[in-house]
Amino acid sequence: MKIIKAIYNFLVGDMIILAGVVIVMVLLGLIHLVTALAFLRPASSVLLILALLFILAATLYREMRGNR
Image (cartoon, rainbow, N blue to C red):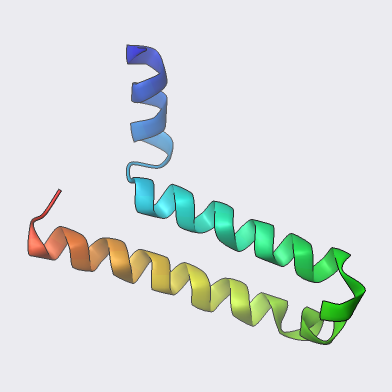
């Protein structure tokens, strides 16, 4: 268990980042697989960048508040 936790802390370090990135990747996968969402494909890179910036800002804000 210590090894898994060490790998997690090294790669991710925070559950907000891990969960946020997984959710964003699932949504982008849905955009590319579902034909009803095809109109969002040209904006998928912008959505990815904005979502990742929001996730990182949320993590930074939580760290600044000092709550863990």
